Structures are given as C-alpha cells and as structure tokens.
Amino acid sequence: MKDFFKEFNEIEWRTYKTFGAFDSFESFWREAEKLIDQAADVTEALDGPEWKPENDEEYAEYDSDRRAARCLHDEIMTPTFRYSTLVVLYMTFEREIRRFVDAVAKERNEKISYKNLKGGLLEHVSKYIDKFSGIKINELSGYGEICNLQKVRNCIVHHYGDIDGVR
Image 1: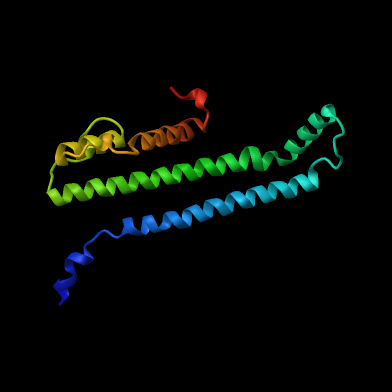
Image 2: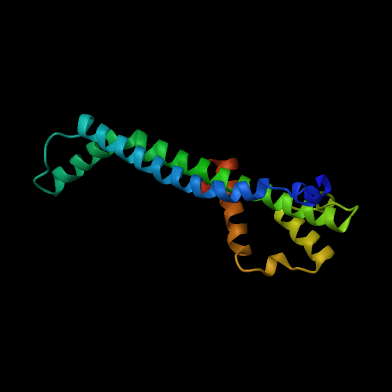
C-alpha cells in the first residue's frame, strides 16, 4: 500500500501552492493600495489646505499645498509598493519557470542544464526547451509581455524605475 502513493507523493506541489498564492497576493495588493490612499486622504485632511480656491491662480496654490500634504503617500509609498510588488511577481515567475525546466530535464534525464547556456533566464529557458522538446516558447502568446515585464523589473531593480538610466 505504501508504494501505491509513491508517484503521487513525489509530485512537486509547491507550484500549485504558488498559483493559489497569486489570488491572495492580488487581494493583498488591492487592499494595500486602498490603505495607502486612505492614509493619504487622512494626511491631506489634517495637513492640507483648509481653504477653497476661488480662481485659477488660487487653484494652482491650493493644488500645490494639497500635493505637498499627500507627497509621502502618493510620491514615495505608492511607487515603492508597486515596484516591490512587480519585483516579487517576476521573481515568482522566474522560480516557477526554473521548476518547470528542471522538471522537464529530470523527466527526460538530461545531463545538460539550461544554466549552461548564454544569455538571460528567458533566453536560457527558451533555447533549452526548444532544443530538448521542440517547443518554441518565444513564439507562444504572451512571451513578448513576459520579456517586457522582465525589462520593467530590471529597470526597477537596477535604476529604481528611472527609465532614463536604461539602455
């Protein structure tokens, strides 16, 4: 009876847990955004302008005072939170794609690893899967979007989101 479940027990279940965690992660992201926005509203109510503008010139001053009160939340916390969320999302994708390729290699008993190929992870995986399974990952729907996500992640990690610093 012990051997009956052997194959089932050897399945890598972490991937399934990761996919389930994405739903929770989305809820966390939405709630955190709401909390930051609510905190900005509270700060604006406490520290923002207490008068209402009556003309365009006053509106510019009013808006400047209002933005100054919300600055910590709108200009620092929200972008930093979004940057970190995107990096975690891409990191999770990379982990899962590595697991996928490792599982393919193990199943096919391949001695060559995708880690031996030149280029970035997506290039490694694409070349490896193409070579050993004939599947052209770089031609699949969504591959371009993943490459773009990788570029945004690299911009965040290496240039704190400053697009001017990216080649």
